[in-house]
Each structure stands twice: as structure tokens, then as C-alpha cells.
Image (cartoon, rainbow, N blue to C red; front, side, top):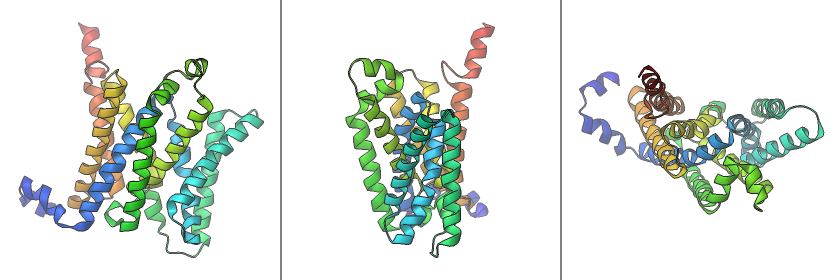
Amino acid sequence: MISLLSSASPISWLLDPLSHDFMRRALMVSALVGGVCGLLSCYMTLKGWALMGDAVSHAVMPGVVVAYALGLPFSIGAFVFGVGSVALIGFVKQKSRVKEDTVIGLVFTGFFALGLVLVSKIRSNIDLMHILFGSPLGISGSDVNQTLIISGLVTVILLLFRRDLMLYCFDATHARSIGINTGLLHYLLLSLLSLAAVAGLQTVGIILVVAMLITPGATAYLLTDRFDRMNVLAILSSSISSIIGVYLSYWFDIETGGSIVLVQTLIFLVAFLFAPRYGILKSNSSIAS
């Protein structure tokens, strides 16, 4: 495959994969999920919810297994367990003296371990590697439809509640003081996080979906101080890295989810080094001058 790539022209490098139905589906779904996760990652970055994203993405695993075992859409089970993990985190935090970060670690590892046990005991055709690392190249038509619905729902809700969520993430105390129901926004954002994690299962899997929910927002945060521009940059970087990752996985025969996340990480490193105001090379040059 590598020798074929070296002899191929740039045009054939781009167009040859599009002759396959599975590649067209993979590119479409990966770009869509990347854009949705990129948009949500802006709120996650401002709120400082990287660990919460990790918790929800891992906690959906037993829901996926149970849904498959019962013949239900995996998105239903994953969403129920994702929201359930958030409710459990809140309950344990309120009823004990254990700090939130510790509670999050306890809950998401417990749910993830439950999912592993269920996979080993429930007779089904569930592929553990598919759940853990995703498989956009093998996504089915029904899964495409589920992903489209979930992505559309998350996008619409984020747009409808955009201003309130932005204020809540910037300053929850001020939002509460002007009459905004921050409790509702808290659980709304967590529910959207659960839905986005479900959508990301198809592209990068449970293990790596947290990167799609954090890295694009972190990258855009280094590049701009304006939230609207941050949204655009996060969506673009996430969608483009998803497309590039799928192409790389096709031509070099590598794991797709890992390829997507690796491209996102490289984009972040470029921003970390060369961002106009906040890149470390820019900062060092400013200090030197």
C-alpha cells in the first residue's frame, strides 16, 4: 500500500478512496462527528471538564453492551448509562466528603469495568475492539442514521442555548445572579456530552472519544480570544483532522480512530508552538525582545 501511495498522483490519492462506498460513509460520518465534537469541545474547554468528558465516554460502555444484548439501538443504552454516571457522580459528591475528581475517577472506572465484564459474559456478536477504538470504515447504514440524528440534535440544542451555555461556562455565578437556571444548563451540557460520546463511538471509540471532545477546543483556545471564532476554528480543525485521519488509515492501513486523534494532537502542537499570541515560540520571542 505504501509503494502504491508513493507512485500515485495527488489527485488519485484524494479521489481513489472515494470510489468505495465504505470510504464515502466513513469520511462523511467522521467529518460530521468531528465538527459536532469540536463545537462541544469549546464549552468543555471553557468549563474545565476534561475529566468529566473522560468519565462519560468510558461510562457508556456497559450501556452499549446491554443495548446490543436486548436488541435495542446502542445509542439508547449508551445515553442512559452516560447520564446515569453523571447522576451517580453528583449523588456521591453530595452525600460524602470525597472530592469531585476522586468521585469521577471511581465512577468511570467502575462503569468501564462493568462493561468489560458484561462483554465477557453476555453472548453476542459484540466486538470489544470496535467499542474501544471505533470503526468508521465498517459503519453500517443504520449506524449512519443514528449518528446523523444524534449529531443534528446536539448541534440544534447547542445553537438554541448558545448564549446561556457560554455565560454558564465563563462565569456560572454571574449567570445564576441574572436569573439563568444554571442547574438546568449543567445537566443539559452533561446530556449533550453523553450524546456526543455516543456519536464518537463510531469514529474513534470509547478510549479516544475524549480527545475529540477536548483537543479541538484546546487548539482553538490558543488561537483566539473570541468565542465565535473559537467555535469556527474548533469545528474546522476537528473536521479536517477527521478527514485526514481517515485518508491516512486507508492508505497506510493503520487504525482509524488513532489516526484521527493523532492528527488532532499534531494540530494542537502546531498551535502550541506557533499561535500568534499564546504560542510558546511567540512568547519567548516577545520576552527576548
